[in-house]
Image (cartoon, rainbow, N blue to C red; front, side, top):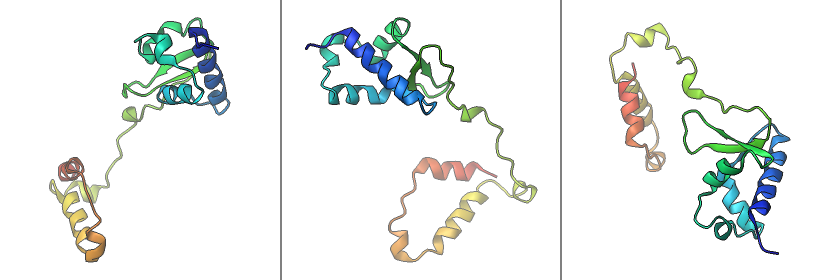
Length: 143
């Protein structure tokens, strides 16, 4: 049996319904590998159309709808048609308040505290510590 758009729609609808049993979306990033595992050659059916574009085009006729994260462009998923879901918007949460004793310290004190704590590690543990530069810069900017 050769795959058709209806085959893909039915597959995605079933996946969205299964994921929704836990009140979670079926993340679109799983769809490509899952379709391949199910031996559905979606690339030839879609003829160059991106899977996300296909889902956007068919979400009305399929038994699913597309949900998108408000800030993370790549985080998209499928929920059953008519279901209400929103990704958690962690960027909109209240910032963590620092205790007043820390707020009077100069910039970079958090980084210095961190480096001081690292200096107490044994050499064999220090060899395994890898810290991205962006993390160090964030610590240097904190009060």
